[in-house]
Length: 283
Image (tube, rainbow, N blue to C red):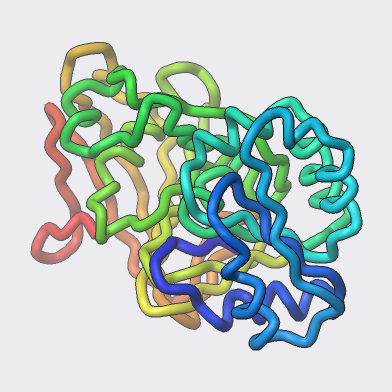
């Protein structure tokens, strides 16, 4: 379950609860409180709801943390700072336990920073956040920090995600992430899923995604390497295919084909984005 941040979406959590078999729902975070617990309890009939805060590598190496994850029937990664998830949980029993849960078919979801780490490729925010206006001018700016394989979800293989998409004008940075994946030889087929605030996409085991909520979800793909992607020079990158969907519409992530949405194409020249949509809107 990929949630774009902002106000929580009841239908998204109910979707996860339904697939948990009414078992133990576990919220993971690196900081914060257990505020999700009463919210989820009110929505769903479950055996239990708990929040596990893992705020350091020492905590992530505690066998009790991994054991708690291994007994969960649904795992949800909260918002916050994804750098903490990478810095604290990577190469620890916690990371291994989450990936073991995924292999067992346990439903997994995330919102905001929690969504950012779900794809095979993720923006790790290790040097603070990245801003579109900055990284379009320099795709090798220090804020462009990309992680690979933090989590291993088959349906999100080859995909980089982003959140709070239109509200925080993150298109430019996501295009930069895709360009870097191609330029750095990490993939020959860059794919992205970008989710607006108060929107979500529920992905079933076959890779079929159903959009929920008020905003839009953008499915993006590029196979041609960027024409210009080097340090200190504005990005030039073309032929980025976009498929935009809203609530009720579906997208097959396995076959990379949508139904009912809006297709268009984006290009970047000298750091400036253009769109084939009527009126030229990039979103």
